[in-house]
Length: 187
Image 1: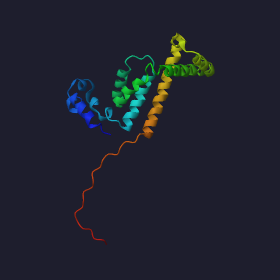
Image 2: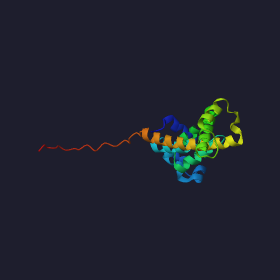
Image 3: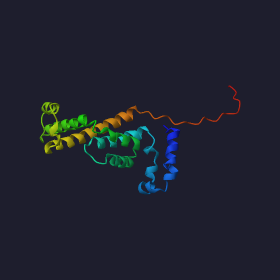
Image 4: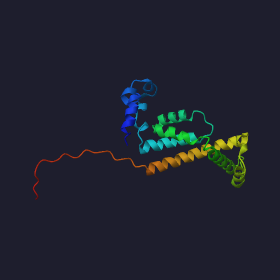
């Protein structure tokens, strides 16, 4: 998949073309990895790797500089930078009423089944549905972060599998075989 021409022109004006970036500050810091096409073009493998790295980072609540961690992770695994950064906008104050109770519920359930504390899932569900003001107490924070790690890991793996199975890369253009100039006689 190619970027639209206007996007390519804008990137060139911003000195973001591969030829302008070579030898620059970013190229000095990251080497040839910053010039890799998989960071910029959406392919099946680069999008799946970006989801695998970006989703667990966005699920961890109250993590400062999520986008910085996502960019570093995308550079390490050569995932799509744009998807990795876009995933970080899933954890906003608008999504917190769904995100935080889900992480808490999962964390409490995992702690209950591993016998390290927690409560039965029915009790946790009742507790969350009647009000979740205590989510920032010491015991609740442990469940919150444990749940976010488990949810991020499972969501990252599930997204990786779904993207890898469903995304179809456009086939590369092949050149036509040369036209033969001669007459063939049937046998």
